[in-house]
Image (cartoon, rainbow, N blue to C red; front, top):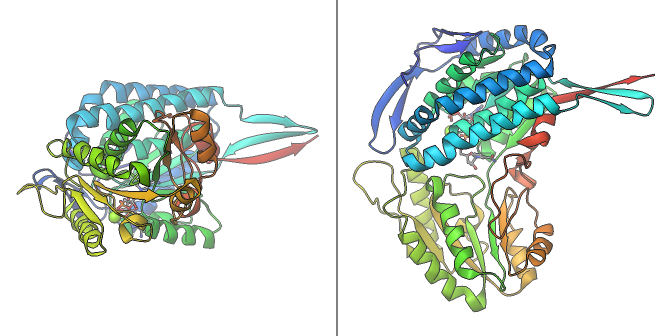
Length: 462
Ligand code: NAP
Ligand code: MG
């Protein structure tokens, strides 16, 4: 696609008031591939006003018609799937096959699910002598990260539109071209002017102005816990609704009865996919001490297979950060069994698939989110020990449990302080609620639970 030199506000591409520019870089070869506007506070204000003006009309639009627009949006995403994958590869660096199979395909499934939910959800229910109406919350500020650039956008915008809310989106500065493509798709789907608006820009400028804007009723943020904390504080002070999808440090718990080779291979693939830039990645593998050496050897072999196929990290800053964690792991006494801090290639922000053994639960690499292709393998003694380690971080976003028998895995999963657990390699479900326990966040995305986030209730008594 060709980059736009404007912002998508009130149904058209308009020049930004701010003259600041974002250079979009291809992380595989470090070349600048586009220059796009970095919005200022005045641009954000214009976009919020457009969303406010469009709100009464869209909120009053029958759900069936909102569903029809979302179905049209899904169809445009299907028609432009190849272009979406190419754009994500160009600005995020993910390998083309992964861009097709995940970055382009998952948002199509999610947009489709909200077309259906908008049509079938009952926005009214009878409770005794009351009728309870579910009404849109209002103007939504959506602030998204770069790691799954289109998925993160669709997981907010689709339920917001289904609920009858209007939206201003501030996407990540590293992946604005995917967001521009999404705005084109919304336009092609004949969503009325002002219902969806795009302001590309920097977090501390456009993002902050949007989160603080008094014309915004709900801030839905996905990103780091540090920024999420600030956004939660700003929303709290203004008594605004807020949804936060933050970081994770998820555990992959391999119980002694599990198929070890399968659990390790799937676990390594889970961490290496998207170059480890997945908030729900199972970055801590927990293995019983009797099978520990065998698991480490399996993981070393599995990680080596990713050396040639892994994509780069998104930018130089993330690469520096990830290398710093690898160096810290070595310094704290963990045993490096694959990869390491050296750059595997001359150009591009690459980091080698890295595996650490002999990691203890209190080490930095076992506590903090690295957001790169780095796996830590920790030994445990018995199930209570495994549970203590699994639950022993400030996060609680995801996890996995493997056991010979499903019921045994489920019994363990029930005791985990985390928002989602894959049992013996269970598949991603776009209708299942996604979100965090503890400091991994507030609120849920996807499916009916994700829709409810954008609704507020009004009770009529008879
Ligand atoms: P980030 O720096 O927090 O950025 C997320 C978004 O917030 C970006 O659009 C960013 O703009 C914007 N932003 C930054 N500072 C802001 C401020 N002061 N006010 C308002 N907005 C601001 O996170 P990131 O580095 O892009 O992404 C990596 C992190 O996101 C990881 O910790 C990861 O776990 C988390 N994440 C969580 C989930 C989940 O669902 N739980 C999903 C994906 C990622 P800029 O792009 O200009 O910085
Ligand atoms: Mg950032």
